[in-house]
Image 1 (tube, protein in one colour):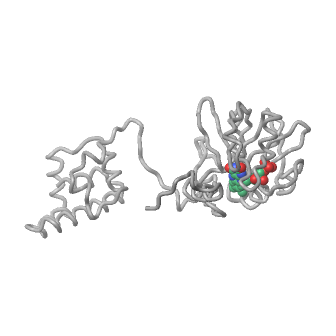
Image 2 (image 1 turned 60 degrees about the horizontal axis):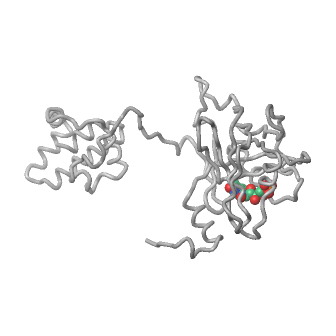
Image 3 (image 1 turned 120 degrees about the vertical axis):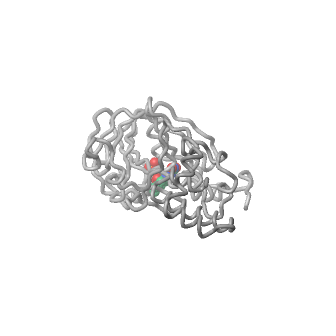
Length: 295
Ligand SMILES: Cc1cc2nc3c(=O)[nH]c(=O)nc-3n(C[C@H](O)[C@H](O)[C@H](O)COP(=O)(O)O)c2cc1C
């Protein structure tokens, strides 16, 4: 393992290691306005939501690593404490990237990148009409993280109005994760797109208190067949099964076959049972898998 001391790294090196590792990052496509009414539009991937109620998002226009200058977005929110956070989908990604060009102060990136300005309801910066979600925000606070090259400036934006395109909603009026077609920023020029193929669910009902991996027998924890993901699913079961439940599983045809074929061969028996449990996990049969590995 390579271990690096942050204080020995230059801003460029830190930027590289951190941005490749802390990824994918959502993109805040922020529209802002200065005191003279000049409109600005720029993307920021140092961005996330940090509070639900009050609904607070934070994004960070950093001092340029290259020359320590500050960004127009930062200057604008210090003058007019409002912004719109527009969410970027795949159809917008090339124009969004174009909008990150360092145009001179006063240049409107809506025009440069070819986006449509949509009048906001509560704030003066316009929304990006093409964005699937547009959030009108008031700026609560701006926190400077330093004055050296690369230092961030945290903009705490409180969401006041959320506009959502209806075609990304499901029947119950919630945002459909498969329809929103989000993109995110990674290291360098890398982006990723959230598609149906790469979305998956992890069950973690709030009411459930899993037994934990530490309550699984050693042979299961150090299995040559089961992976960390498999152990995570087994450890999420609420209760260890009873002796009777475990015994009942030994009567299942697949299990019986393994037990009969491996009499006196503990190593192969364990391996085959773990493989069977693994395929049960793949089918979502977590409780059955647990009984099989506990045989
Ligand atoms: C997807 C993407 C994400 C970006 N994220 C950030 C960021 O989080 N912080 C930052 O300072 N610059 C970020 N940039 C670069 C700024 O968008 C760029 O410096 C822009 O010109 C700033 O514009 P402004 O000076 O008009 O505010 C990002 C660029 C792209 C394309």
